[in-house]
Length: 162
Image 1: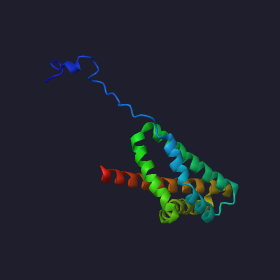
Image 2: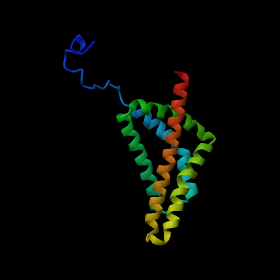
Image 3: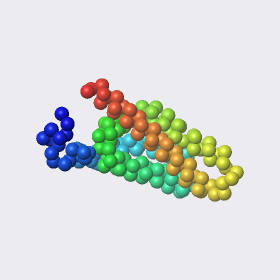
Image 4: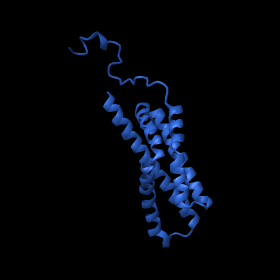
């Protein structure tokens, strides 16, 4: 049957893509799971990096703020995908009682950035800027790994229960 014969196509909207309403963005759930996942990685990050310099602490704080902001944007742009990240994020939060995932993510997030800046060290002038950038990059890398793990866990559990 063609669109000329089908009465459902008579309203002129047939050629337009219409999004189905996704409902309320999961902002509160994202905030709760984000806060639940902060204690161990933040403690380990401050302890391991010895972030006594204020710029290092500022770099970590900016990294945390950027990750939270990106999660808020994802809540509004892709609420279904964010749901699976939040769902898996609770498993990652519980895993902090035995923080192997957090330690591995911290190492994987910190060392590539630290090695890059150690290699570029002779060309850099100010150590305060290096501390900020290294800990900002390490925080973003660690957070990205933990969020990816949460997404993988959430999707895996979601697929297994469907």
